[in-house]
Structure formats: C-alpha cells, structure tokens
Image: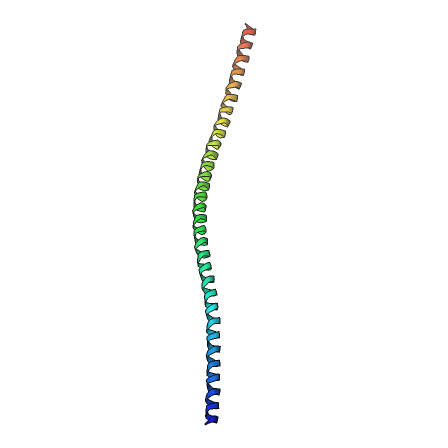
Length: 117
C-alpha cells in the first residue's frame, strides 16, 4: 500500500505541477492579451485622429482649389480684357497717326496756298 500511496502522491505532485504550469501560461497569455488590447485601443485612437485630420486636409484642399480656380478665371478674364485694350490702343494709335498725317498735309497745303497768294 505504501507503494500505491507513493505513486498516488507522485501523480498528485505532477498534477499540481501541470496545473501550475497551465496557470502560469494562462497568466502570460492574459498579459499578452492586455498588451495587445491596449495597442489596439491606441491604434484605433490614432486612426480616429488621422481620419479627422484627413477630413480637415481634404476640406482645406477643396477650399484652396476652388480659390485657385477663381484666381485662374480672374487672370484669364483680365488677360483677355488687357489684350482688347492693347488692340484698341494700337488701333487708336494708327488712327491718330493717320489723322496727324492728314492734318500735317492739310496744314502744309494751306501754308503753300497762303505763300502762293
């Protein structure tokens, strides 16, 4: 019977040791789970913050692109108007030179008629 008691005691000790090892592994796994849950929470918060920042940047980009389009429109309209002004100025200068030439000839003609008389 002592031999059976010793064997039973040996099994009991081994069973307790296995249970303790399983408990240690469970505790280690629980710590890993806790760490990963904390990391997951941090990452989710980072994603939320980055998503909000992305939304703000997208809104800012949209506003700036709209403003740039307005600048481009204003510049194109101004350049077109400036081109018309240049064309009108050139036409006016041509007409003015022609009229000045006509006036000079008329003045010269009048002078020569007056001198002949």
